[in-house]
Length: 215
Ligand SMILES: O=C([O-])CC(=O)C(=O)O
Ligand SMILES: [Mg+2]
Image 1 (tube, rainbow, N blue to C red):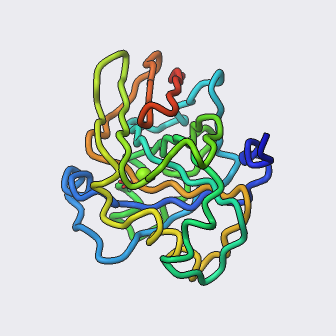
Image 2: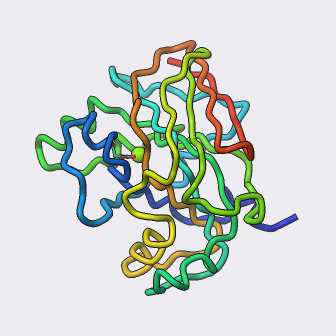
């Protein structure tokens, strides 16, 4: 078994991309970016299947964002787009849980989004997916249901910036290290979750996962 199966323990950062699907940028009245928008989540935000997503105290608008995750397999600093696929060690399916009320307030004030995006349980994550299970990460169906009702349904071909472009771009600023996770942004259909909701999500026919939401 690959040592990357343990990426939640060995990885030291989660790098997230914002507004990488134009329909999602539009649904939140945000402009479509001309270069990737990056933010970080602490690795303490991971939650694995079997444990619940907890709505933080005083958050009134917790949203789901289903995203393709790239698990880094080898150290990458200032690499080119052509070299980028060599840095991919595997994949995971992730949820970028977002306290939208807190994010909107921070955006208005020009403050960072760290709490809105990085609170405990804000990164529900699947098991590790071996690299050879996915031929082309830029051509994958990605979906999420809430209590059996379809909310998000997209394909990674609609990403504004490809997986390889993102890895290269991020590596110009942050050295990527084995076990680090890159979350590639969410397609449209984000919505509020409530205590008791059951979220199911899937990536192509390679992985699916389920999480319960608690107050
Ligand atoms: O909060 C946002 O909408 C930005 C983001 O994470 C995404 O587009 O996936
Ligand atoms: Mg996101």
